[in-house]
Image (cartoon, rainbow, N blue to C red):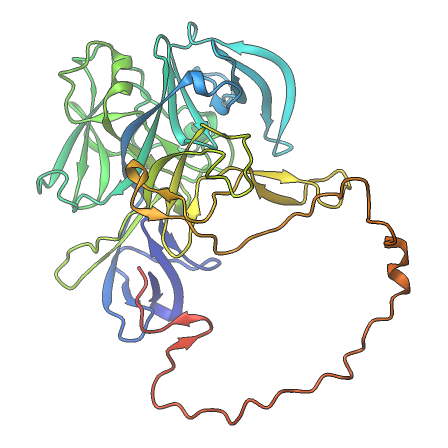
Length: 430
């Protein structure tokens, strides 16, 4: 939804958060006007983090040989920030083949080494195909990945409770983090000693913040401490907790928390992308935005716009955000001018018009909004009689023959224009 804040600041708010221009600042409680004819008035609500519901999906690892993932090695207290690697699944284990160099801001080749599931029974991974939240477990033939939606606490998921108790066992975030702790990577509490002795948190609807519930220190927000802003390290862009659940009775060991069908994570940090933002109406109720539609999609050669068999049978997590915004097809850099430097991004494949997609493979039909055509070199060179070298000798028209067509007088408007700058004014977008 397009909005206008005090001082004439224009912005946009969606399930992904608040987007503002430049150095514009908006605080909790600011009055907000919907930026559309007849737009409604709201109150901006903000929180320094967001609770995210994760629902488990699976894909057989046997179908993922050669698939690339990102992995951050476990951090040990007192050590430098952890390294980031790119891994490829080899049907038994993962092979690390690139490491991220923060000074170059780029991935660099390394001498390959094995990242074994025997040594790391649970690997938390990120993937271009399945999003940032997926995992592989020792002995499990399937990769787990998760669809996500942000919770405000007002959706009715929690039965109208003012506080929701959540339990964590692994990768639980510390409360009141300092910039020094974040820059050093020291953001997690120690693992729980047993499934019966979890770390306890409470998500409080009044401030929409996850609080660590300590028997001695009481409730403390699981956010950055006041005036603490990290400027370096692997978590400067934000931090996520491990799984948080409402019930531990089905678990027998710590790693079992990764197998539950639904869990929550808490994301926080200094950047806007790690904060929650919403709009409250005149009754104080938070407006519900339609969340992005996330679903698994299995590509086939028949569904490929170019009849390309390369990704036949491979699964991807797609996300539809409305208004022609379909995400999830991986992009790769290409060097279009052949100067040795990638200068353009292209999708690995394109879905043909008319293919049905959505949860369960139904509900929506793909249709291209824009297409980019790439010409392939002609087999055997140009046809006989055509010489590209002669193109410079062609005489081009100078445009002197052009005459402006007479399309009649400018029509008189009887009311507010229906379309301004390509935007339909009668439709209120959310």
